[in-house]
Image (tube, rainbow, N blue to C red):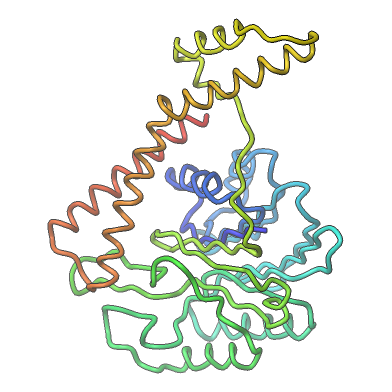
Length: 345
């Protein structure tokens, strides 16, 4: 099973839906946890309608323009029982077929360490139930100096000590990561630029024994999305779908027509089945070579962004010309995501 956790910093922003659909298309999660949606009432209802019928949802409304949690899970993959007794978390009991249940806790910790104490108590009580548990999300706190770069020097404040004590008391294990070292950046220039590791995942030892091949990946962003995979199975390949946008290309008609003209032996059902398969195969190849240019460009831009962010991660800063390139690439990425959204519509 794959779990995507993301502090989206506002699900009503124009860039949210293209970015979210891109993440879902690339990583095929069965469960998604979104925090800081900043949505309630009608806005939340509109988002649910846009997500479509493939997802079941559970939401905690924001307070004004602050907070907001949303859990999505694909219909039919597992039984998910959801509840929350704290505005900083959503608890999901995941029951997969022919397997014992386990707990997924989606976390969005307060920026006020005194309010975070409530979250630490709630998660402590949850772990004490003895059910394999994993907690993932934005903990809004760091534990040590190596989880921060830039800005003021690291000091061992009370909130950071309390965070360490919470992890140690519950015997939680940091799942580590692959990908960018830091998960959040304030996007300020020069010496005011700060990176921190705020988004992460912790698991109880019995959860790790249950899923020994689990891995956690980070995907570069303002608040870095996290992807937990509980198995090492190969990537899922999405089924064939006929895209309406193909009909705007006159060449698509020729591809279908030519595929159906290929002589096929057998009874009527066999001939129909074979010609459908030929049509699907030719449309896929044509889509990859011609229409798929949007996706190739998007992948190229994402690789270039990742490389520049990697260099910035290693050196602490980028030369001005590289920063200019990075800003240009981010703008291009946003533009391509909008085209991507139009394509899927």
